[in-house]
Image (spheres, rainbow, N blue to C red):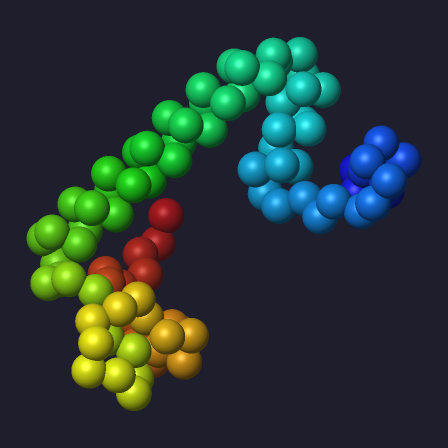
Amino acid sequence: MEDATEDVFGRRVWLNGPGSMGCVGLDLGYEPLQLKAMFIVCRSLSLCAHSIEEATREKGWHASANSDMIQPLSLEMQGPDHYDGPADRHL
């Protein structure tokens, strides 16, 4: 798909997950507006879930490692050593 973007746009456009799924959706016969609606619904649901998690589990954002300012997690704090969510479960 990325090779085709060079032919169409004259430069390489790197596709992310939603871009790739948009291509698959078009191949399956969905219209662009239908795909946009599906992405908006999915993104809204994930935002709601994240808001509920933040409201019930934590108070605001975690501070980064070397800052007094409250801000999103630094990359060094992301990983299994700093995870405080539910334990893995067998599905």
